[in-house]
Amino acid sequence: MRCVRGSSWWLWCFAAALLAWQLQVSSILAQPAQQGEIEELKKRLEQLEQGPEGSVFELLKGIQISGFIDTTANYNFNEPKGPRTNRLRVFDVPANTFSVNLVEVALEKKAVEPGTAGFRVDFDAGRDVRFFELDPMFAGGIFTIEQAFVTYKAPLGEGLTVTFGRFVTLLGAEVIEAPDNFNISRSFLFGFAVPFTHTGLLFNYPFNSVVDLTVGVVNGWDNIDDNNDSKTFIGRLAFNVAESFMFAVAGIYGAEQTNRESPKRWVLDLMSMIMPLPGLHLVLNYDLGREDEASAVVPLDDAMWQGIALMVRYEFTKQFSLSARGELFADEDGARTGTEQDLWEITLTAAYKWVKGFETRLEYRHDHSNVQSFNRDGRPTKNQDTVATEFLFRF
Image (tube, rainbow, N blue to C red):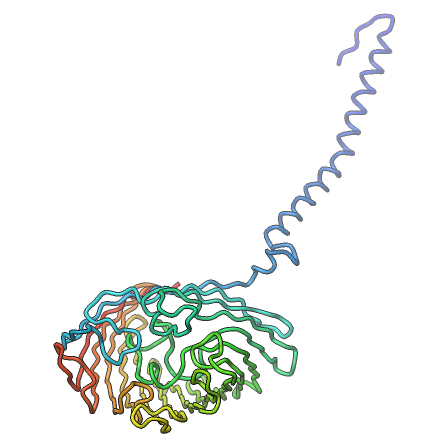
């Protein structure tokens, strides 16, 4: 501002200078305050991104979401009639049809460190549900909660993991989830020798990097609520000898008949996995079972069943693999299949992974029984031949 001569020019110049000085000082003093506010805003943004401790954001941290979609088409060369089914199959029961077998979404937060907790929930929908879901709460529908359990890893030794809720069985070599099996169809052992799920309490303790023990008490086979006043005991001892070899012994014992505690059922399950060569996977599974007063041949007689299966997969490339399964299953008293019979089957499966997460499979299977357990054009027969193709998407 330029001062003009006059009687009070010096007063106006002094006032203008004083105002300019105050504005300069205010600007200088305001800079640290503004910088502090900016830093505070940055901290708040970082907290929002990371999730404030003790809030919902903190609980959601570490949750993994996974799942798959499994669809198939199959054809039975016997052209079965009345009903049109693949006899003695577990999941692929409807014959000559397209099917949405299973859609699964799983939420999981693992209890990794001692003193931490976790959970897992598997939501399943599709045609397969009515074949593995036997509990009255979900049976007959197309939706179920296959697993729903909480875990806590206690700070004891190597870490004692406690699991409470509903979980898949410890027995067997195959599983409900199609992408984790070598073949499209399931074995007789998977369908008739062992249970699918349990509801109860498990304790798992790894003694070291080789020996791992799991024991528990459950309501029984494939039920949420117990069907009698007796509990069932289950356990598994695994030996992880090397990355290319493991061996496990599992078993289950308890009363499974409705409102009857005296008759007991038990199964001994042996399973080993070997990788003798890169890309070559061998799985051997043996089951021996017995139940008091469960014979379908002679009323109130005891029943026994046993079977053995060998599964082989060779990965020619990262995309292409071939798998084979052969098995024998003896239902000596008809307790598991409803008929006293000896079964065997052989299955060949080719698989190709087109892109990450997407896979197609093509399968041929031959079933045989020593009695006429299958259906050829409405007439009984001892043999059954099927082909199937599968489209899998895993996420």
